[in-house]
Amino acid sequence: MTGNSVGTVSVSDTVAPQALREVLGHFASGIVVITANGPDGPVGFTCQSFASLSLDPPLITFSPARTSTTWPRIREIGTFCINVLAEDHEHHSAGFARSGEDKFADVHWTQTPSGAPRLPGVSAWIDCELWQEYDGGDHTIVVGRVQSLGADPDRLPLLFYRGDYAVTAPVDRSFQ
Image 1 (spheres, helix red, strand yellow):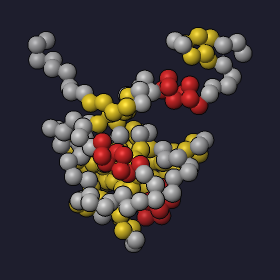
Image 2 (spheres, rainbow, N blue to C red):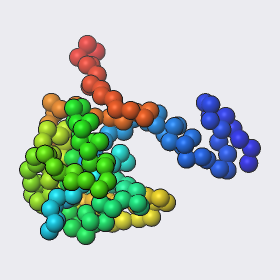
Image 3 (tube, rainbow, N blue to C red):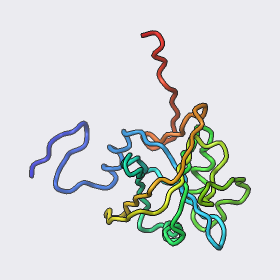
C-alpha cells in the first residue's frame, strides 16, 4: 500500500503509536474517573476513553488498558460509577492516574445507589453494573448498564485536547 498524506502524517500499513496518539489527540475528549467500593475499600482510575453507547438498553462504554491493576478489582466488584470530571478537577485526573498509591487519600466522596464512590463537584455521574467485555487490542472494551445517574448543569467538563487539559463553555445561541 502506498502512503497517502493526511496533514503531516502518512497513512500506511504500519501506523506508529506516537503518530496515532498525535493525530487522535485532535479529538477533544472528556476525562472520567471510574470508581467502585469493594471489601478492601474504594478503588478508582482515570480514563479518557469513555462514551455513551445505547439508549435502549441504557449502556455506556470505556476502555481501560490491559496493564491496569485497578480494572480487574472493579470488574470483580461488578458495579462502578463513572465520574465525569469538572473543569477544576485536574488534581483528580492526575491523582487517580497514579499507580501504587492510596488514590482516595484526602478525597471526600459520597455513595451512589450501588455504593460506588461519587466524587464531589463532578459535572455528571453514571452508576453502572458490568454488562459485557470485549477484546480491544492493548485495551479492554467494557460495556456498563446504567442503573442511575445525575448531572450538575452549572459544572463545565474537564477536557483533554492535544496532550493537555482544556475547558470550554456552551455556545450562546440566544442571538439567533
